[in-house]
Amino acid sequence: MKFIFEYRSLAAALIISFAGICLAHFPALADGGESRKITPAEKKFMETIHAELRASLPKAPEGWSGEAEEARAFEEVAVGFEKFPVTMNVGASYSKNETEAENEAKSKAIAEIGEKNRSAIDILMKKQDELSVKLAKAAEKMDMKEVEKLQKESEIIAAEAEKINASMTADMRSSKSGNLLKSTSANASVQLNPSAVYITDPAVLPEIGGCIALREKPENSDYDDKVKTLILVGPWKVSKNAEGGLDIKSPYAEGAPYDKIMCAAVHIDASPDITDLLVKTVDLKKIAALINK
Image (cartoon, rainbow, N blue to C red; front, side, top):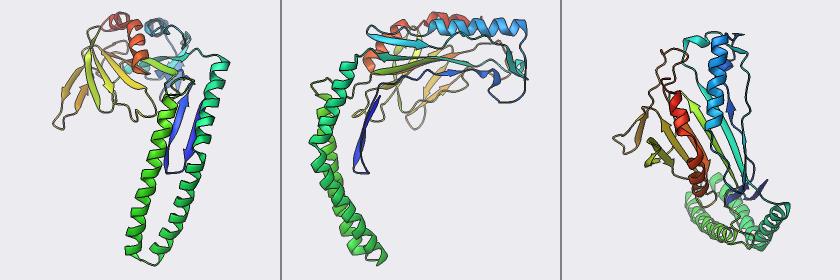
């Protein structure tokens, strides 16, 4: 379920998502080319590691439900599959258990907050529309003095929009139905043999189970309390670069045999408190046991 208030370019969208997405990616036919029948040895290998990755996924926290990717019978692989190290991504989604009454109460609370601010928003939108017309006319006449004046007016309108937005955010977080912006969904996945991982402006966390752990700064903490956490399993190397950021080097080697597992990465996208619970149940030892097996 998703609730969205949109105020053109003046106010940010306030989004609450209750849907989980089950991430599943199988590399066997990733290139979209020709396929061939899998050999018995390849089949056993693929199904074994797929089962191990599924078993290593975090368990749903108390009060939450989880859905992991189902077991898969591998029957075909891409032509040339045996020339490169296997890659695989197995995922699960999680959602907070909420009753229909709880969801209806949240819907009602959000509608009330929107109605409370409707008049102010309508006035602001009217100002914006009028300003847009004036700007267009001034630009057409090449009246730069007038354009500069109107731009300053637009800054005032933007400030008013931010004020309304801040008020609505506060109301969302202190609603009688609870924090309406708190995430009620989460995702986790285990990526096998990634040649690279991508995470924006990460902070280094204390090691988790002897593995390097990183956490991404939220894009907009006002509207979404989810954070991205990455656990690197295997001999990864993380170092600071000249710009003050982090360089993350994977031990993946393209020329290795297809059944060579060199590393893995656990991705978790959830609020910090739920992330902590998911981290406690991810089986890092099971994942690590696949490396150099």
